[in-house]
Image 1 (cartoon, rainbow, N blue to C red):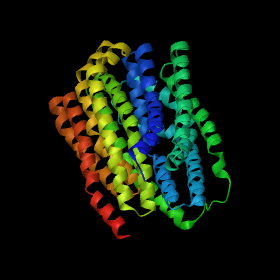
Image 2: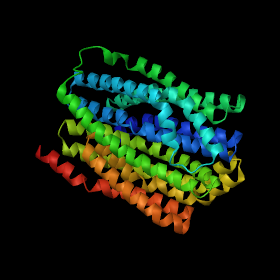
Image 3: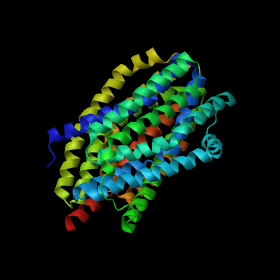
Length: 429
């Protein structure tokens, strides 16, 4: 049975791993803020969102792998646990190679929605061209970390992320501060780090390759592709929301785009860390679902949410009172710094109001409720974009941030309506 002590034992390595993951974008922004100007910052912001559209759309490789491997663990099905990993690795490698081949077509499509200057777009394109070489490694790495999480190997997940982010931070600093490569150096450093981490991760999970695994079981493959399809639609809908947020800034000014990018990194750090509790909920929910235990599922959600609320409040207070020092210290461009400082209070609210949707994501991902995730994601995107279209013309960046905060409330409500039905199905199973 899950206890508070076990919750922390599982969550702390995940939180550390997630914090390490979040530092990727933070280091990129800090290096560009220190050694570049607002055009460099805006280029990294736009290119990073473009990659979010491409990569986050395939986030199902992590999410479905976690849920399906946790459910197999709940059924004590060792062969299926191995098969889940091998299927996800094969799929991730294949998709990564396709993205690499199609990158000349993907790049203009990815940047088409952003109203940036020619100079910013050229810098963003250089980042894109360098980072795309890491696509197969990144997507296979999602499968590795998803399987580690679903099988409770959170210490290995932490080691994986530490390797990737240490290499990334070192190379980014060298390529930009030392060699003066600008955004292209950020992209190259990230791609090399992704390959390094994949090789390390494969070495860690090597024991999983021993023994029989029903790779081509028709029912299991159908379940995998069904869950992946719905989770992909859900993820793309949410990426659209974040992309729209960045786009709304570009419609105001380059300084606002850069300032919003700095604050988005604050949100990313909080979300990644607080997702540690959502990931424990995801793992425990998957095992409870595999074991058909509604009480176990309810306990997992209650315990993980208690810790998440405490941590979310701590982040909100830290950002509100300490975020200004970070911005002043690391952002050299005056206009970008002033734009970030002006909207820091809005940013500080996100770690608190984001708890409900992040925890509900863990519940529905762990139980692989793809249809609920898909429907909620699409509804949220429609509501958020409609709200931004109304508020931004009237209130500028204040409207942009107000719509963005409402997006988190929309997410909680859209997923919350599916919770009673999920528990009823378990109780009657």
